[in-house]
Length: 94
Image (tube, rainbow, N blue to C red; front, side, top):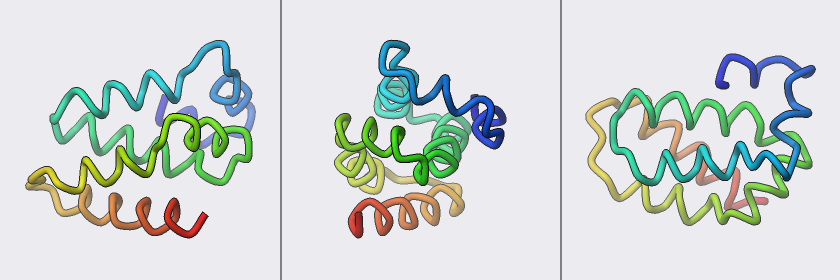
């Protein structure tokens, strides 16, 4: 899904409220603390954050609270911390 998020033609699947793809990804991100999963799903959210319909879904699922919760976890990978900080700043501004 992360790789598909780079392509405009796949955004319609992420925008679809009935599929709830972003909501399901957020539940996986919240439940699992494996760094590989966190890194990939954060990159997925980062790719879709500029899409207006995906922004609405992220707002509805309270992505900012999820980002804050993830920031309070200990991550060995510094890229995760940097991505979380970038995502926090974006969601906080918007």
